[in-house]
Each structure stands twice: as C-alpha cells, then as structure tokens.
Image (tube, rainbow, N blue to C red; front, top):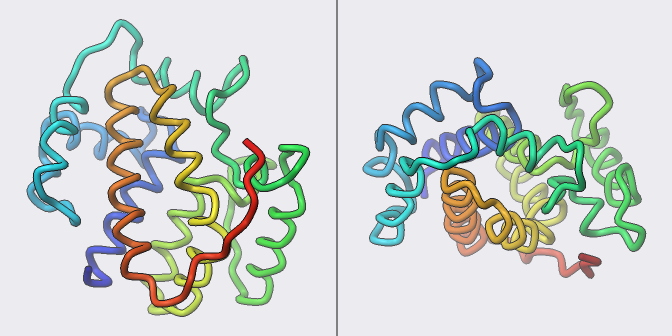
Amino acid sequence: MSDATFLVTARVLGALFYYPPDSPQAASLVAAFRNNCWADDWQPGGPALAPLRAGFCADSDESLEEAWQRLFIGPWALPAPPWGSVWLDKESVLFGESTLALRQWMREHNIVFDTRQNEPEDHFGALLLMVAWLTEQGNLAARDALLAWHLLPWSARFLEVFTGNAQHPFWRSLGQLAQLTLSEWQSQLLMPVAQKPLFR
C-alpha cells in the first residue's frame, strides 16, 4: 500500500469515526459512501467490499445521526466506547494509564492534536486522523510506532464489538471496512504490534 493510499484511507476512516455524519468534516464522505463513490478506489479492495456497498446504501428505521449519537455520545452506555483506555485499563476508565502513556509519547514526538472539548486523545477516530497527519508529514517511523503501540493493540477488539452492536447498516459496514483496512495495515507493518491485555 502506498503512503498516499494509506493517508487517504486513514483520513477518511478517522473523519467518519470522529465527526458527526452531518458535520462539514464528514458530510461529503457520508454522501460518497451512500452513493457508492468509494469502493473502486479503496485499498485494500477485492470481493470483500461487495457486501459493504449494500450496507452503506441500506435504509434503516434509525437515522444516521441518531445512530451516531447512540454509538459515540450517549446518553446511555456506549456499546463500544471508542477510547483506548476503556479497553486497555483494568478499571475501563477514560484518561487511564494508557492515555497518559499516549500523551507522553505525543510530547516526545512534538505532536499536538486538538480534540473536541476535554476528550481523551486515544479516541479511535482521532488516532486515525493522527496516523493520516504523520503520514502526510512523512514521519513514517512515528506513524508506525503509533499504530504498533497505541492503536492496533486494542482496535481489533473495539471494532469487533462496535460492528456487532452497530445495528445501523451504515455504521456496521464502516466497522467492517475499518477491520479490513487495519488488518491490511498490520500485515504491512515492519515492527511488531505490542501485546497488551484487554479488559473488555
């Protein structure tokens, strides 16, 4: 996978997982996915994308915005919280030790990421956007370290639970697309992914 392709897929997935579907950052991407203007250019491609095309276009009794609110905001318990510390820390808390470790890593690499309000930096979508930014900067060593130490150790479990509980076909398809894409990233990563215990 070329760095340009890596950049695009990370930025698209990051925006769709991080921003509301009707936001300026995500609305045009949502429209492209719902109109099937994406699969021909997505890498990795192949037959696994075929069922996702239908899912992105399918209707649901729940609106896209209502589903996003249920999956990412609340007010009820989120079926798959998108923050790494919820999966990596024994107490399943926000701003846990894994978040502090990520902050320290970001300081060491002079990375500043403006999150929404007082949100932890280890949000799945925010980390994907950080991966895209590091790729764009040409800092591939830091990008690979971010993946190996701070995203891939927990993302597969998060996506498994997210996809299983998404209910809305668009978000379920997005979870499946992220699973395929991050699996491809991991297969091409030169450094080993850190083995960390998960608590959910």
